[in-house]
Length: 568
Image 1 (cartoon, rainbow, N blue to C red):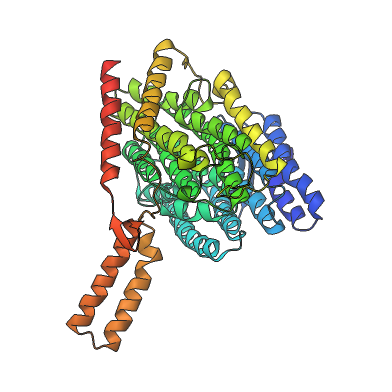
Image 2: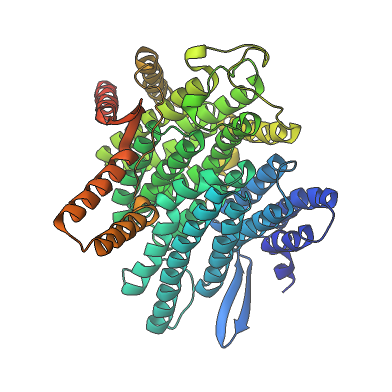
């Protein structure tokens, strides 16, 4: 039972309570100390440690330390430190309390050895993350937070139904690999919803960009990665995950390429990158599970860095629409440079974390002779670099204005001060992304299975470099056509955001007017216009639907990569 006192969830939950009571300056210390203490506790726990409890005649395993839970626990604690430092000067008491409880719930998920404990921490994570979103205190974040809560309550009920059915069928609550049953299907559905697998994904791009700049960094680290952990624990080798994962990766990167809001663009890339992990879990081999785990680890680091850079821009300018930015490079040099470390990491450039993590999943697919999956993964890598490494930084820091003036004098966009703590957090994340890229063994030694793979072979480095360099050349030639436009992308969240209002208004008008054919026709026209406006790019007073570029760029990217793959 002494090991229970070393449970990594305790510092987070105790810290959440303390922050709600202590003075703000003391809260600063608690915010950083809690994840650091948890990281120390994880290091002190030996692999194989297990702590069981009995509750209402149920045998529970509230702490299980093994080769899969440890790497997720380590990166969750590190993410807590980085996000905590980033938000020191901007987060309020309620948000800090919710953020630590949220991180604690995610830590509890990965160290839960039974399904009941897993469910309890899953729900703590869902509720606490809702308060992280609500903490921004705007009408938009309020509505998005409630939609987020609704979706995750649904997921929690699916999970609970699956757990109860599994227990009734097997008499066990042990969280291990599942067979295909009705119970496991319910649990799988809950995990897929939390992983943001389309069409169950829209809550992510809806809610994450509405949170505070620090809250979004917390959100990016935990919900989807806890779901990846659950999939790797219970569903490794389920073939359906291969198809769901690669569809997820393609869907996310496609939407990201045409998104205008910089934080929403990066949110779609969470969907895309988690797709890599889901597909790797579906492959199910030891190398593939290692790839999913390594990619989750690296993704938390570079996605945090990208969102911190975008958040710093929003904090300094008050603007998150890429078409309204530009000309910031000389006034935000440090933010730009640190952001680009995250951009080359997510794109998989050699010497950075994304290269040594993504290639494990690609190699696993190649080893199983899934060449179509390898090609599509490479296509996604091209789209990722195109949007996060080229389009977003060009539009945000340069654009038609170029690098802009060195001061706010005469500048179109005013740039305020960026807190030192934000630079410190971005510096930590950038340093870790570079460190893992230079010393892959630091990450590989943490993975669930022994790694017999050398990322820095000449063929791998040349292949990746050629693909990324040609992508850069293509953007340089076509950047005027690929620039941002003032539009909003229609997604599946429209069904529960707008459609009920449209239907309710139309019904009320039909009833008031006796539901004549003319009135019904006019209402249908209004519905059609409402849908069109969600696709529209605005050119003056008249919305003009412009989707041709989507197919053109996706087709060009696919052909380019296919030709390179065939010639290598």
